[in-house]
Length: 212
Ligand SMILES: Nc1ncnc2c1ncn2[C@@H]1O[C@H](COP(=O)(O)OP(=O)(O)OP(=O)(O)O)[C@@H](O)[C@H]1O
Image (cartoon, rainbow, N blue to C red; front, side, top):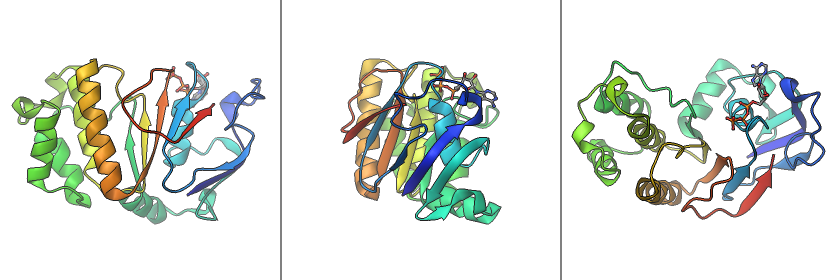
C-alpha cells in the first residue's frame, strides 16, 4: 500500500530519530497486515497519520501509494482514496457538534456506503450508543463521541484503517466492544489497520509492532 523512503516530517528534522523504524527508513505498509504503532507523546504519531491521509505536506523524503508519489496526487485522487481505501479515526474526532449522532453517521455513510442504516444502528447498539441516536454530538461526553467517530470511520469501504489513540476516553468494556467491531469490519473489508498508541495494549489482533 504505502511505501516510504527516508520520510522525515519537518517539525521533527532536528530530533534524534536514529531508533525509529519509521522516520528516515525505507519500508512499506503491506496489504493485509495489521500494525501497532507505539510511541511516547510528541514522537509524531498524529503527524504520521495526517501525512498518510494527505492533510499535510511538510516532510522530506517520499511517500508513495501503490507506486505513485503522493505529492503528485490531485484533489480528486485524494477524494477517491479517502472514499474507497482510507478510513480514519482522528484523535480529535472531527464530528459536527450541532448535528445529531444519526446525522453525523448518515452524512458520511451516504457518500459511499459500506453499512446500511440497519447496520449503523446495530453498531450503535453494540457500542451502547442507541439512546444518543438523535442527540447533537456536541452535548455528548468525549468517550461517547469517540464511539461515534469509530462507527463513522467503519461505515465506508476501506483497505486501510488509520486510528490515532481511538480509545483514550473509553473504559475497558467499551474498548473491548469497539475492538470487536473494528476487528469484524476489517475482516469484512479484508483490510489492514494501523493503530497509534502511547503504549496501551488493546483487544486487537495485530501482526506487527513498529517503533516510531
Ligand atoms: N504543524 C506543525 N508545526 C510545527 N510543529 C509541529 C506541527 N505538527 C506537529 N508538530 C510537532 O511535531 C511533534 C510531533 O507531534 P504529534 O502531534 O505528531 O505527536 P504525537 O506522537 O501524536 O503526540 P501525542 O501522543 O501527544 O498526541 C511535536 O513536537 C509537535 O509540536
